[in-house]
Length: 363
Image 1 (cartoon, one colour):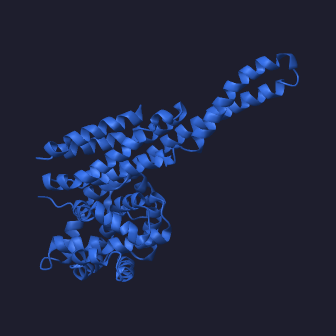
Image 2 (cartoon, one colour):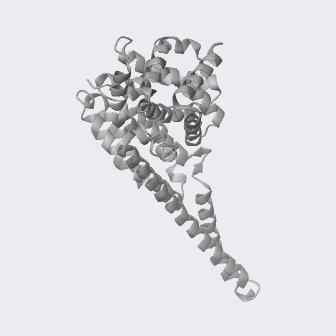
Image 3 (cartoon, helix red, strand yellow):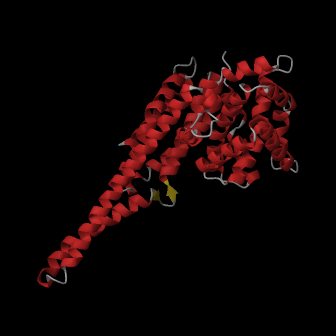
């Protein structure tokens, strides 16, 4: 059966493990999960590039050999006195492989994507580096771990890495060179992310234009009031609806926050986590392991669906503009996963429910 490194790493990073990492770093759990969903394929993309450099494959071999026991000891070190050493050694490992420039660029992109600071995303990468290299070493085995084998393994992972890259994150990495080794598929993912961003910006601009037109109308009415006192009552009656429209437009431009929840961020984070989880499903066993994460995404989407009635029509348009461009690739992932033998019996009810809930957001 074909190996999927993204899947193997994400299976190790269970919801409980992610919660422990978040607590150890003093971060929000949802932000940490979003960051990890981007960092794992991002790290693997960077390592694919290292393997193509002169002497790079041998560096990866040595790093993987050093981390052969990392998976077994990781859980004990998170939140323990050895955590600082773990982060420091992981950061040094990444610096030796990627170089300082690419390491900083990757940490910066993760920070922007998940809403973390540069320092926090750097510490997270330091924690994840031993897991990624340990998984590679475990998969290859110490006897067959050589430059040719590790290059072949990483080369075989390019499609899996591209499938797991969140759209917005791929766009952030577009100018760093970290995706160059993935070839045309990565460029297509970056282009799709750019298109989605343009659609979202266009939708938000349309809402802003509506608000500005309403505001101009309101100002015109206020200018007439002192000159046409005899019509003051009529002007008042007409001005109130215009004022409400202007306020709605301004509210939509300011954001999609309802009841303290940033709906736009909640939806994009949920879809990112969903894509990462789906990309990691390769058989019935990994499908069973993915169920808790899929149910967690379902719960997050449910929260948004429950708040839709509080959104204005303009805000609904902005939300639909965010979700619609992401649905074609997401539906392809759904279909691909359900076509795997033994998976449909486990996941079809959950995936059908997710499809229905996401469809509500596009209306």
